[in-house]
Structure formats: C-alpha cells, structure tokens
Amino acid sequence: MSDSTKYLLPENRIPKSWYNIAADLPEPLAPVLHPGTGQPIGPDDLAPLFPMALIGQEVSTEREIEIPEPVRDVYKLWRPAPLYRARRLEAALDTPAKIYYKYEGVSPSGSHKPNTAVAQAFYNKEEGTKRLSTETGAGQWGSSLAFAGNLFGLEVDVFMVKISYNQKPYRRAVMETYGARCVASPSNETDSGRAILADHPDSNGSLGIAISEAVEVAAKNDDTKYALGSVLNHVLLHQSVIGIEAIEQMEMAGDYPDILIGCAGGGSNFAGLAFPFLGRKLRGGEDIRVIAVEPAACPTLTRGTYAYDFGDTGHLTPLVKMHTLGSTFVPEGIHAGGLRYHGMSPIVSHVLDHGLIEAQAYHQTACFKAGIKFAQTEGIVPAPESTHAIVSAINEAQACKERGEAKTILFGLSGHGNFDMQAYTDFLDGKLEDHAHSEDELARALGELPPVAAE
Image 1 (cartoon, rainbow, N blue to C red):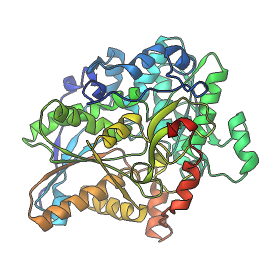
Image 2 (image 1 turned 60 degrees about the vertical axis):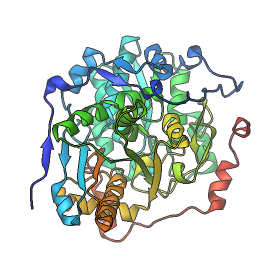
Image 3 (image 1 turned 120 degrees about the vertical axis):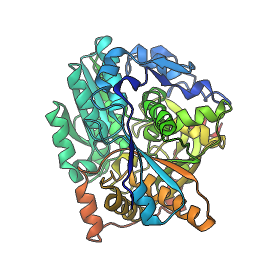
Image 4 (image 1 turned 90 degrees about the horizontal axis):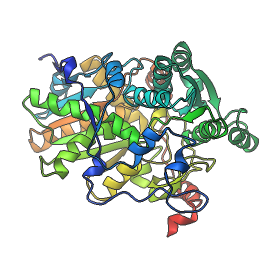
C-alpha cells in the first residue's frame, strides 16, 4: 500500500485575484428584491449591512477581482492549502479510480471559512466599521470571523444556533479565545429571538433564526455591520482561492478531475472548489461532472423549490431567488450544523437550474460511516459537513470499480472534525438517527413563501 501523495504550492503561488463565475454564466442571475417593495434593490439598500466594497463585489460581473495585499499577507498563515491523492483510501476500496482531496482544515479555525472572514474583516475595517455581527451553525464560521476580527481590531458578536451551541462547547471556546462574544440563538437579546422564544421556548434554533438576530443587531447600530459566511456572491468569490489553487495542483499531479464533489449547505465551500473548474468548462475548457452533496435532513437542492425567498426566519433580509425549503423550515438537530440552512446560494442554485451541476443527498449515518473509513485510511478525522463529500466520493469510486473505469475524482475536505468528536462518539454508540422529511413537512414551510415566488 502506497502512502498518500501531497501536492503543496509555494507561498508565492497564493492567488492574486479571486475568480467570479458571474462573468461566465450563460444567463445573468435573477435580481435581488427589496422585501418591502418587491423591486430590485440598489447599493444604498444594502449599505446598513455591508461596506460598499463588498456590495460592489456582490453585483460585479468582472471575471477577476484583485485580492488586497493585507488579505494575502494573512492568507500566508495557511495558504496555499495542500491537495492530496488518497492512495490509502483507493487501496482500501480496491478501485481503479484516482481520488484526490483539497484540504482546508489547515487554517487557523480548521476549515475553509477564514478565506472570506479575513477579506470581510479587512473591507469593514477600511470603511470604519467598529463591530461585526454574525451567525454560525457548527461554529466554523463564527471561529473564523472571531479570528479575522481580532486581526483587524474589530469586535465580533456571534449568534450560534442553540443546538450547535450545546453540542460543540469547544467551538464556543475558540471564538471566545479569539476575543468574540458567543450567544445561543434564539436569544433574548433581539426582537427576532424573543419572538421565536415566545412561541417556541425550547427551540433548538436554526441558521435562519440566527441570521435574523445578527441582521437586526447590524441594522440597529450605526457602528456595526453584518458578516455572512456563505450564500452571497461576494462570499463565494473569496472562496475561489480553493479551486484556483487546486487547478494548479492537479497540473502538478499531471491529472485533471473527471468528477468534482463538494458538500453544500449555503454553498461557499462547494463553490470555492467547483467554480474555477466550472468556469474553465464554460469558457470551452475541459469537461467535468460537478456534484453538490447535502444532508437528507435538510434537502435544499434535492427537494426544495427554486423561488424567491427570505434568507432569514424573521424576514429582515432581501429576497433572493434560490433553492429553498422555506424560511420557516427548522431542520433536525443533525451534527453537520454548517449544512442546516433552509436556502442555497443564488449562484449555486442558478447553475443547478441550468443543468451545469447535479445534487445528491445522504443521511448522517452513511456520512459518518464514510468519515470513519476516511479517517482510518487517510489519518484525518473530517468535519461532519465534509463527510457528505466523502460518502459521495466513495460511492463514485465504487461505481468506477463496478464499471471498470479509471476516472479521476476530486473532492473538497472543507475542515477537520477535531472539535466534533462528540458527534463521532454518538455515532459509534449508535445514538445517531436518520430523519427523512415527509412531503407534508416540506410543504408546510414552502407554503409560506413570499407572494413574489409565484410570479
């Protein structure tokens, strides 16, 4: 059995520009609508939440956007991130497929999230912001923004989904170590949180609820802006460093993926790896099959509706066209907290609607089984979110074996699971259960989509 092969670029190969897939889309995205008027929003409508530099990136159609040098300087703490060929996993599967993974767990917070957290903190500091408010599911985003905020001298308030707040105390400790304040959501600190608690005192929370709380804090305080760890265009733009590096690393390996796989909750990790490859295809380059993998307990892409919806439960955010389960949908308390979001990035939704990518969904017990297989062969305990990409990669490799095809598979290992060991303990003890939503369950939340969704 051969050891896994590591492909590591030198520090001077950190990308100098982010890649913006909006420049290569076959059709432009649907406009973002004002929640009150239903009309397309302008920059001034977003100014209470975001600095103008990020608003400009949100609507940009330029293919390349320069990465500021202060951001690249921070990136040097962990970038370029390694790409591995998983030879031990290949051998264990006895597959003719070649399996590679791009590993983002080498960052300070242990995931891909600092790629955008550092950029957002930088632009907010440049425009005079004093404090950032945000939400977090599993805690990877909250940890990352806490890290970035500290570097640029910003206060950070994190509303953490209550089920994850209770499941993952060490993530809270990381945020607090970096200097952030972490609050269980729903909380009594906001009107949005108090309204939820009045109706559901025992609520486990959701990303939609936590977003409402964080947005409310930003909207009510002039010195505070809101920072989002996924979904929006500028977030996916910053994550493109993953795929840009991976393309060069695959060239180092003398290979190119036939199949690319990423886990998907809001879409940032998936898009960060996939979009630079997909952009090459859209510009006439190599063909590639791209798969977004989500939890069956929160099946946004596979069972949701492509429609205009709110990004939050309290209906404070603009309306975006995306694959959604409805803003009032509250998923089960699965351990992949970073994938428990009712909606999907508008750009990811757009490329799925155009048939440029495909979507798969898996239950959490199958994902953890695959994650343990990966840990036992490759030595890294993956984040619960990342196990969704792993189970898909394993299944694709096994399909290659059945068909006798030597395809090349690349998947994103978005982070390590070192703070998620309770989840693995629960799995090994047989305590994890799979939950499949009935059509009636999904229909109830989808029945509350805003009227524009029917237009």
